Image 1 (cartoon, rainbow, N blue to C red):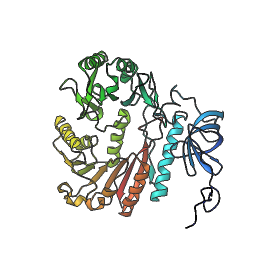
Image 2 (image 1 turned 45 degrees about the horizontal axis):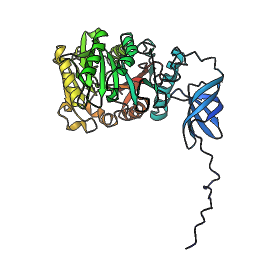
Image 3 (image 1 turned 120 degrees about the vertical axis):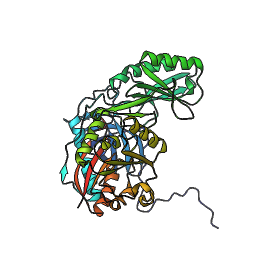
Image 4 (image 1 turned 45 degrees about the vertical axis):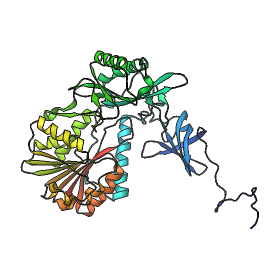
Length: 450
C-alpha cells in the first residue's frame, strides 16, 4: 500500500471551493429585491445574501449571522443609502429584538409584501389564481398582542438574572421597558416584571414567564425547580397589585395559584365566551380574530338547515359561532384536552348542536363515525404543516364549499392544488394581518365544487 502523503490537498471537482463566510463578518452590499419573508436580497461573489432590515435599492453594511453553501443570512448594521420607502422604526428595540422583523416598512408595504407572498405561492405551487382577491383583513398595527413570552436566564458567574425578549437570530436577551405590539393591559406588568423576578430568593428556578390578557390578565411562571413560599408570596403580591392572576407551570399542566380562577376571551359579536388555559392555542390578535370569524361566516354563507364540519377546531373559535347559524356542527381536534375544553365552552354558552370529537386527522376519515354522513360545508384551520391527509379525502364528504384558514401560504398552496384536482374551484382568497410588524402571513381561501 502506498504511503499517504499528509501534505496533499485535493480540489473538488469543478474548480476551487469558495472560502467560507465567517459568522460576524461585515460586508458592504447593494440590496436588489425583497425575499418573501421581508428580508432584502443582495449578491456578493456568487452568493445570495438575505439581509434582515434591508430594502431594495439600499446600500448597507450587513453582519453575517450564518452561512451555508451559497446562502448567507445577515442583518443590517449600517445604512449608507436608504430607500425612500424606509421609515424610522417606531420601536427603539426593533433592530435588536427578535419579535418585529419589518417595522422599517410602512404598514401598507407590509400588507403588499404579504399579498404578494400568498399570490406567488398559489400560482407557483398550485397553478391557481382566485376568481376574486379579497382586500386584506386588518386591525391596528400596534397594541394588538394579547400574549407574550418573556425570556429569563440566570448567569451563574455574575449572579444576575436577564429578563426580556430574545434578540433577533440569537439567544441573547434584550431588556425591554415597553413593547409597542403588546396590548395596553399588559404594559405595566411587563415594566414591573424584571424587578420582582430579580428579588426572588431562587431566580435560577425560573424557566420563562408568559403574559396573557383576556377575561383576566395572567402571569404564568414556568419553573424548573420548586419555588419557595416566600417567592410565591412575592409573585402573588406583584400579581395582585397589577390585578392579574398568578399561574404556575412545573412538571404538570399550568395551574392557577388560587384555585377556581379561570382565563378566557370574548367573541362579542356572537355574545360568546371561550375559556382556555395557558398553553392552549389562541389567536394572539383579538380584533383580527373576531373579524376573521365574521369573514369566514360571510364567505361560507352557512344555512340554517346545514350540517357543517369544522376540522382542527381547537377551543371552538369557529365552531361556536357556526353553531348559532346551522343545524349541526361536527368539530374535530387532535388534542384530547382541547376537545374537552371546546365541549365545555359549547355547554357554557348553551349550544347543544355542536358536537366535538378527538381524532388523528392524519388517518383516513372514512374510519371515523363522525364522518359517515355528508356535510354541506367544511371549514378547516390547520397548523403550519397544513392538512394534506385531510384534503385528499374532502371530496368524499360531499361538501360543496370548503373554507381554508391558513398560517402558511406554502402548505395552503400545496393543499389547494389537491382540492382543485378533486374538482373544487378557488373562488376567493385574501390575507389576514394577524401579526403586523412581522412577515408572517395568515390567509383565507374559499373553494367551491365545480
